[in-house]
Image 1 (cartoon, one colour):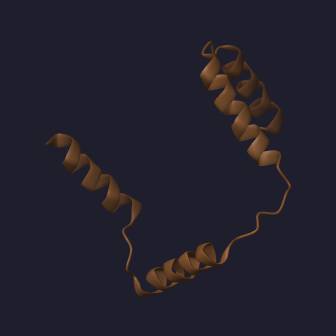
Image 2 (cartoon, rainbow, N blue to C red):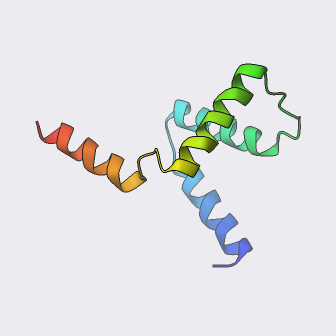
Length: 77
């Protein structure tokens, strides 16, 4: 699908939305995507990212598939 076709599809879908809250959510998403400001991380955030990188490197994480299977088990109870 070309960019022009994607835009038209998106416009068509948006025009069908009647819930004001949903439209506000879409506006927030679009505003977030166009925000060019630089996010400054604080020391605690940098530490959490550093720890996450170590966990990834050592394999101490769950795959998306693992999490989806776990959620499925919980919902079946």
